[in-house]
Image (tube, rainbow, N blue to C red; front, side, top):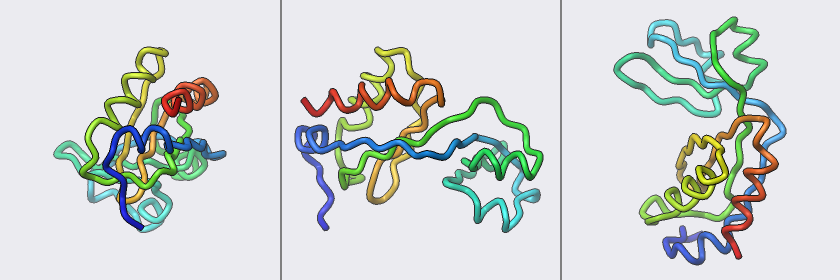
Length: 132
């Protein structure tokens, strides 16, 4: 499957779908990471200050980790290219205008947007409106 780069096609075929699972963002020093946490992580990013983990809420609670906020993951099912220009900006701008914070993660096949649990339905509406 060839990844799409045309912004018009990307937005038309965005097809945003929300996860049923709740996620949290937390951070740990590299020496505190365990195989269990790494395996449970939806995402991970190493920064100078520590390693950020995006974990299912249940996994973070079980490990007694500190976190702020609870998020749902909206996956844009269009196969977007990492070279595509404007997709993240279009989504972030539309969500920002609706007052919704958006934590965007671009993976190899799809873009994923973590939004506060209480805003997931509105976020889906906003993103779906971009296809019109």
